Length: 297
Image (cartoon, rainbow, N blue to C red; front, side, top):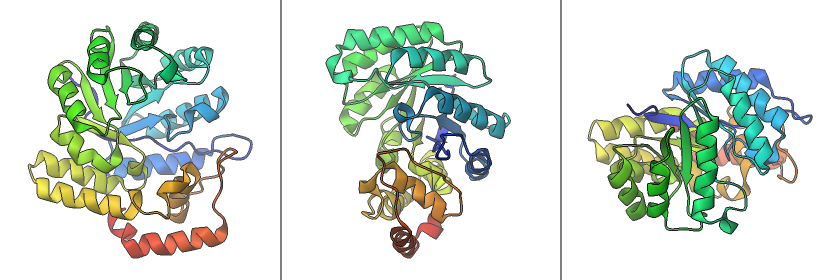
């Protein structure tokens, strides 16, 4: 059986200037997303600022999500880091908690590694983990992606792939060949519908923090074979949040700022991220709600 089906957020990491997790906010985010249909959380991935946060903050964030979740949704602990020893430590920590799976980006400086070297990394992780492991397929890999997926599919304890691929010809080739063995999850939020058409079992993404209800409707519309409704919802989500120049070009602090506009205390974002000032926040709020944010959340 495939472990992950449906929509999962790459939940924002929320912390103060001392890099201590803001537990009240995390609990509110978890409740909001579960109440609006998400199946669970992908903790401390790229959206969760994995490589710029210390191990201590990442451990605290995972522990906080596990506690707030209370067994309601599924939890995937992302343990990829810039330093291999940190990934090992994070994997050991994840093994000690009640979660559902472990995942990791390929090693840092991926373009310098050969495919077989990245495969060895995932073999190590698969042996290290007491939970099923999810690997990434991403264009930054220095190899043909279909061949890479084939090598990954042969590793014991690899449960699935996060396909962060905008090329849906390649995406479809991978799901057609290995979708019977592996759990396939769409990466790019703006093309969720495309991923579903090409065989994804669900999706993991940033946007689903903000508008979980809409993302779930896209998924359910697809399951109900109403592609027209799914596409309209996708286009609407893209136009208001993803394509809007008020947010997308400016990075993680501005994505988190949307949640602040929605009433969540999102704390701090580490240097060198540029924090939006009060005037920008006010203008962003007007533009987002004028574009229809209220209809998506």
